[in-house]
Image (cartoon, rainbow, N blue to C red):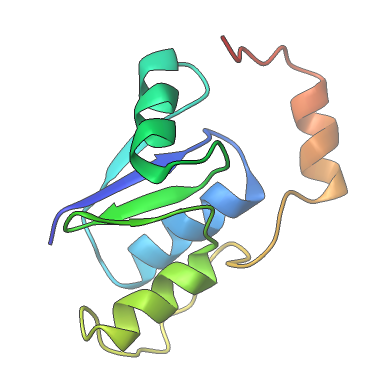
Length: 111
C-alpha cells in the first residue's frame, strides 16, 4: 500500500493521522505542507481544496480527514484489520489549548 499524508508538523488533526499509521504499523510518506510550499500546492491540486490533513492511499485522495476517518476508510476497504493497539494522540480532534500556546511561542513559517 502506498500512503502519502499531507500533514502539518504540529497539529492535533495531523497527529491523529500519524497515530493511526503507527497503530496499524503502516509505512507512509509524511509530507510537510507548512514548510514546503510545493507540498501544500500539490495537496491542493490533488485534493481540490486547501484544508489538511489529506491522505492519499493507493491513489485515492481522502481530503480534510481525521485519523479516525482514515482508520474507518482502511477498515471498510479491508486494508487493515481491527486491533486494540493503543494510540498516543487523539484521532479526531484539533490541537489542545496547551498545544496552541506552545505553537504561539514559536514563529511558524507558512510561506
